[in-house]
Image 1: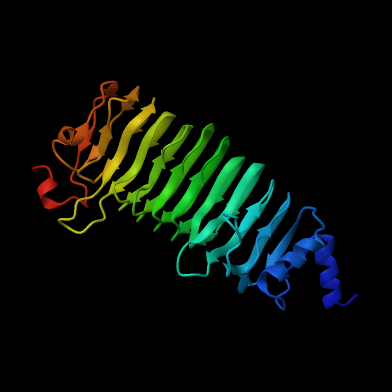
Image 2 (image 1 turned 135 degrees about the horizontal axis):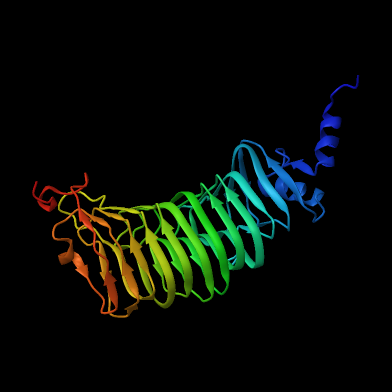
Length: 335
């Protein structure tokens, strides 16, 4: 019977293209050395349950993965460069169980994670990104999945920019405590899903100032996002389906809450089955075309007084007023 030795374990890992980042080296050198063992080919670098201090950018080539054996922390300790990303992901890459943070007192100049240049099929799971100018930057990429990812403490949590970001899904997790939660710029973005907690973003939750179509915002918890939870202000924001979300004020009594959904310029939006516990649930300007408002639940009566209706908006019958538990006493309907 052959004995199990350190060299046999290393050989087995190498055969499966698994390499452990050397804990004896500084963070980025240990990770870079392990990535070099992959020789640009697909494989996985395993991180130990520790903090890796990194002063250089980390680039994953196609098919390469970073996975923590516990919960590893990648801490960016130096400026990477003018708006350069700390961690760049390529096609087929994945990250799991990793905290990615900036070590300074304020947001770093560049993104924490960048996916761009026609990269595709990227998975980020059970990760946290904090302290960067942009938590996650997306540009010209597609088939992206973010499972149970938390983005916090950034100037902009998630940025869609440039052109052709397609088919991204945010499932579970939090986009919280940023200046702006999600910002959309550029054109050609298509087919996205948001099913996350969006809260405590000081200047807005989701701010759409670029072309993004066929979007589903559902089962989101929205609270205390400054002036608005969701703002559509681009005429090429088309076919947004905003349904089964929960909008709560989250503010102390006497402090006015922001608006829930603001449709300033968009086309063919659908609002349905949301629970609005805020005094300013929905505003629709005359520039919003083809809006369909199906039954929702409101915590104020009459809810019509809090709605700014667009001229091309159709309200379907059946919206209900119910005494939602977070309503202020003077907003409850009579029993």
